[in-house]
Length: 372
Image (cartoon, rainbow, N blue to C red; front, side, top):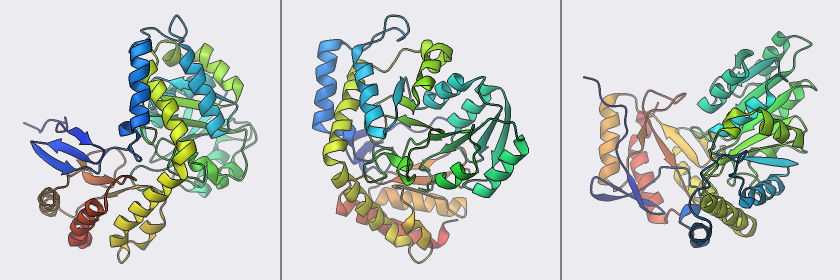
């Protein structure tokens, strides 16, 4: 009998700790990079909204569920990211799918990074046009894929922003250079939001100016510590989503208390984002320093996450046991497009202590020669 695909149960009990099988362990999982889901102001905003507004609008926004807090959050998101309009989605995963349904009939081809997140591949299927994959983060491969679509094509390019597995970012400027004037580039930057850029706007800050061909999709459940997602782009895209996206019209939106939490988190990023990002970057570099002899390029990768796979199952089990002995939860996962069938992914936060980071470095140092 094969092992169950369901992962072990886990309960986070503090910003940086989790309870696992009765033990209190340091937690380097999840993507709550500033632990804003634990922040007093975010929690207070959620609790106050729950008391005043209830937990759920219990209807699509296109019928009777269009609570005024959604428009308020959309205005704040559009202003924060510098786009004309925003549309909330029930989850971060459904943001690219909603955008795809809005673009249906306008694109002739979809060109997808071969290592893109599954939400982008699902979005490509919704468009029901020819799908082409290009080599990961390779502008020349994208150029060849666009050329193969033909001169009269209107391609849509789909790519992740900050990679959650390797901590790298795509060369967006080079992508836009080869993209035709009528083409579109959709960037799903779930992990770059809040963590990258001078203002925390993510990978779009790598662009010297805003390009009308860029559509951004984000999640509110990671650096913002809330829930839901959003599509950001021109106003016409939002209007088309309202009329053409069955995912949007048929979904109950995020609960109003979590929208209030997202608004509070945005305020915190406006006020304290620079300090949070500086602390996060310092913590990331403190851990990645252990890889300087073997993987020096990792130190220049901007993301707060990294993944390691062991060369054989015996060493994988030893690594897992050593983490547990050190009081660290072993984040062994199986994920599409990972470096191996199973691997360990570590997400550093701005709130991990020096002693917690030192403990992780100590374990990693013992196994650097065993990582693939």
